[in-house]
Length: 389
Image 1 (cartoon, rainbow, N blue to C red):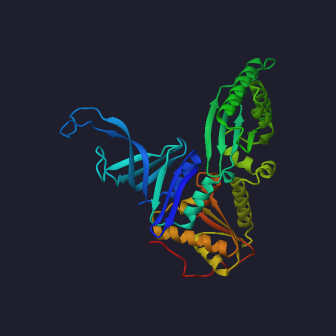
Image 2: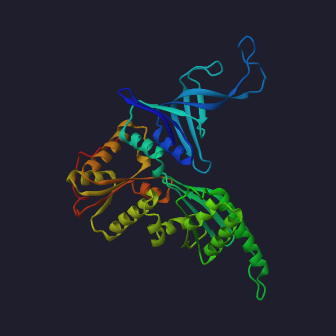
Image 3: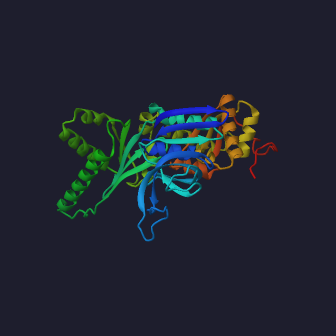
């Protein structure tokens, strides 16, 4: 994401940015809340008017590019379509667009959008800083497959994006004759290889994982390397060192979760945020299963742990909790995060578009790993815990 301008003062915060990919749209989705003011280019159906200024009866509407400022009512992010849609009412009047009229805008990539918030907080700062810091936007490519089906994906800090899916019927091997099977499998693997090269930005990715049951991953890697050599592009050929093989029990997307937990992948992706969150949630789950009083989830339990001073080692929190129209509730979570940091704890925010983020959401969206066991944490009473209406 390109940062054009950023002004924070007593009147709130105003930022102008240019989103460049789906991750940036997801950042904007988490940044923009109800009653924010956004200014952007958008298409609107306009009814032609006559010389008297009255719409011409029966004349078809024309789709026109206009620049509108909207008071936000709600926003929707559609991961599969990589679209951010914002519904609001107009704050500026145009000849064709009356003041206060309803409009739903689709945020366009590589087009500037300006956002004004009356309440700008530390979490908003972190969202913008992370999105505009290229070093924090490391991405991983992944191809997970089994005979007859393959999925080519991008794994970013925020989400897993399916770039392409290939399905092909593979005949079973016949006794003494496997030619039909081998031919169909070779076609399937070649199509998957070409799809991966076409849909993944190999040069800029940190790593590319190929995962499958059995030896399919190795066969696919060989074909990908052959296709890269055919291009004669030295930069693409150098990308062969980025590929890693892993074993999965399935060729479907759920296989990625188990792959990210494998020791080989853990080591090679240790410095990416998504892998760090996988490890943290794994550690949290182990403490919870061992019942060793070092892992707790729920807002009240987190508040009690924070009150102990120095007890929290890690705070795990999902972005869902910050996407809240209740300003006081959102402010509460922002302040809680700041208190944990000030107390020496580390904070890790989980994307609700990743499987581990969804799992954490099912456990209230907030949890802690403690520096030491606190057996009576759940039994203690504390009436000071924040509760929303």
